[in-house]
Image (cartoon, rainbow, N blue to C red; front, side, top):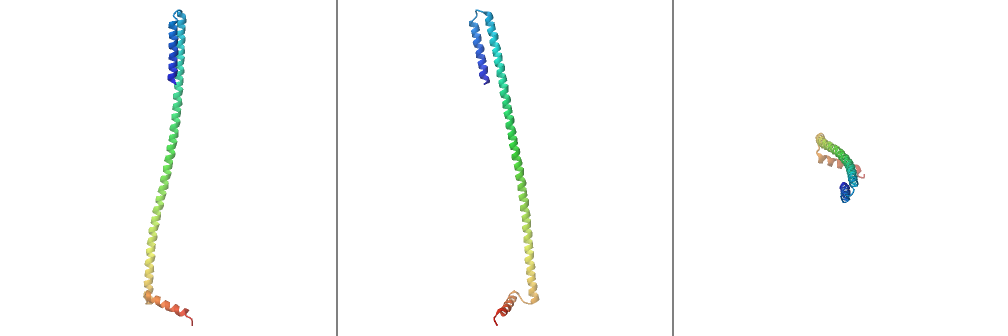
Length: 149
């Protein structure tokens, strides 16, 4: 756009100069036409420079807005990453806690099994009967109880 304006200004100036040279008969008119052409050229160049400055300002403003948007997006991404890191950390802590609880349950289960085994052995010792003998004796007792008379 700037180049079009500048090209137009140069074209107008050149056409006025050519006209002035061809119209040599009146030097005052020629000089006035040259001054007018130069004045128009200066005005067109000034307008072109102003338009170029406005375009640059708009471009700078647009670039600043784009950068601001990118920074906002980057900030949101960083916040999301931090949230996900915290969630992952909590999940890992929960997993570790569950593993500890699981191990504690296994230990308790083993202790219960050991106590049960010790209790059976003690009962066998006290009663003088082993497991199979105690079982047979209980079955006989229940048969006797539930048999019709």
